[in-house]
Every structure is written in C-alpha cells, then in structure tokens.
Image (cartoon, rainbow, N blue to C red):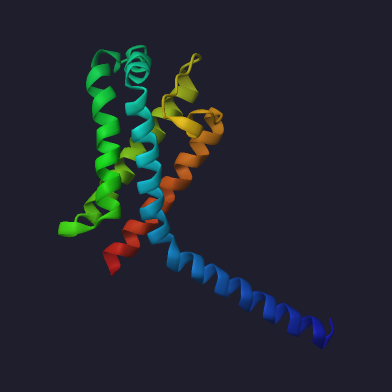
Length: 158
C-alpha cells in the first residue's frame, strides 16, 4: 500500500464519518416532519375515501365490528398527530411523537400478522403507500418505527 492510498483512505473515512454524523444529527427532525407528512397524507386520503376505508375494515378479522370507530378514529388521530408534530405548541411534540411511534408500531404489528396468517390481505393505508407490496410496506413501517424510536431517544436526552 502506498502513502497515496493511506491519504485517500483517510480522507474517505473522514468524509463518511462526517456524513454519518450529519445524518444522525438531522434524523430526529426528519423523523418528526416525516411522520407529520406521512400521517397528514394517509389521514386525508382515508377521510376522502371514508366509506371505502370503513367497508374495508369491516372484513378484517377481530376488528371488523369496530370498523366505523376505526374508520373515523384512525384518520382523525393521524391528522391531529401531524398537526401536533408540526406546530409544537404546549410542548406536545414529544408526546405526539410517542403516540405516532406507538401507532406505527400497531400498524407494523398488524401488517406482520397479516403477512404471516391471512391469505387475503387488505390494506387501506391510503394513496401511494397502499400500492406497495406487503413486504415493502412492512420494511417501510419498520424503518419509520426505528427512526421514530431514535428521534424519541435523542429528544429525551436534549
């Protein structure tokens, strides 16, 4: 190995380390606004297609009897959380982030159970997200879940 290789590797590793640090520094705020955007988008889409969303929930095992409550409750909760995340009045951003992560955890658990046990899967997440494959959607949810947990850890420290 030549001295030029050592210099190049040193610069590369410093660059990668700096990029990694920038990502970690910005990930909490990106997660917060990402959750807000995601929940505003899916909540609005569900309310726009409320009859279809409720009808789809009626055929889900175990929770179908609560379809109207879920049909109205989930999108309203998503929109309220999105607003609380974007406009951090009354110091509700951290509790709203906690609620967002818990809601994402519930969605993720639901998806994992559906993938494992239900052959005729239904997804009424809304918009583009609804068009993802179940595996991709599960990976998407797990990534957002991880980002949300990281953001909570960082916000609790500050």
